Every structure is written in structure tokens, then in C-alpha cells.
Image 1: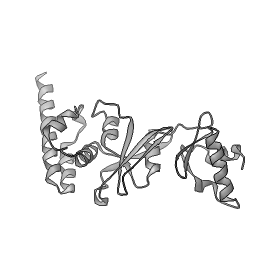
Image 2 (image 1 turned 90 degrees about the vertical axis):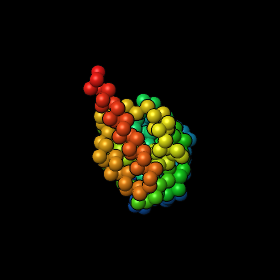
Image 3 (image 1 turned 90 degrees about the horizontal axis):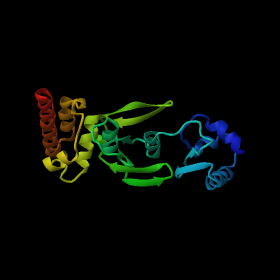
Length: 213
């Protein structure tokens, strides 16, 4: 296979799996050797075993980090600090894309960024939605409320007032307190119920401050 043929097959896909190239009468070992050569030559980025993206200037679409994260671990969704930053609920820039999944926790450091996957029980894999990211890309991302609860759930002492205030939550008018409390009940854990009440009080504080202002 020539590299030009690879570009034709991949087209506008921001990332692609090896299996995309193995259809028809091809030698899988030859294809894999070519992928290794092209990666070593800087024409491709290998994100994990069997997952690649074209490198500039060959790529037609720059892959969004959230799209990459969804492909790194199937059945995962972006959450915690990454989703909270995306929604403008915390001020910090998060250099690692954090997702949650029901498989084992893991991390990849790639040429296109670092990707961390936190483990939660399968029954907690809810409260996310498919977001349009531009350039025809989409990704599963937690709602603002679920992203906050995932972070608190995965953080020891995450339900303490000190920790929640340390997040420096902002734009609290974008949080749906009713959804937050409903989602906290889904976990069935006092820790999440306490946290939801604390956050609700912060939303009230912020709203009262705006009225006084």
C-alpha cells in the first residue's frame, strides 16, 4: 500500500484503527510494518496500539482531544476536570484529558496530549451526551452536573467544603441544581448527597451576590 492510498482510505477521519486498512486481499503483517515505518518517518502518530492519526501536513482534520479520548477507550466519556473546563465551570487549564470508563484505569501520553481514564462501576456510566466539536467531530462528554459529581466521587474527601471551594467553581448559573441532586441520588452514596447540597449552597451564595451587586 502506498501512503497516498492510505490518505484516500482515511479521508476526513480524525483518527483511524488498523482494521480500516485490513479489508480485502491484504497482508495484515505488511500493513502493520508499513504503519510502523510511516510512524517512524513522522507521517503518522500512533495514539495507542492499533489507533493512529495522520500527522501534519497530511491530515485534513485536526483531531479534537475529546474525539481522541473517546476512541482510546470505547465506552468511555470525557468528564471531571476536562469537562468542567470545557463548560467554563473551573478556571484552570487542564493539560490531561480525563475520562471515565468501566474498564481498568490507565493513561497514555502521546504526541497529541495525555489521556487519563478513571474507573467507575458500569452502573454509574450515565449523565453524558454527544457534543458537536466542530469540523464534523463529536464526542461523548459528561453533563456539567455529572462531571462535577464524577470528580467528587473519584476524589478522597471530595465532599468536603474545603475541597469543593478549592475548585473555584465559576459560572454557577450554568449548573442545574435539580439535575445535580437527582444525579447524586443515582450513586446512592451519602458522600455525593452531601456534596450536592454543598454545591447547591454555593449556587445560592453566587445568586445572592449577583442580586446584591
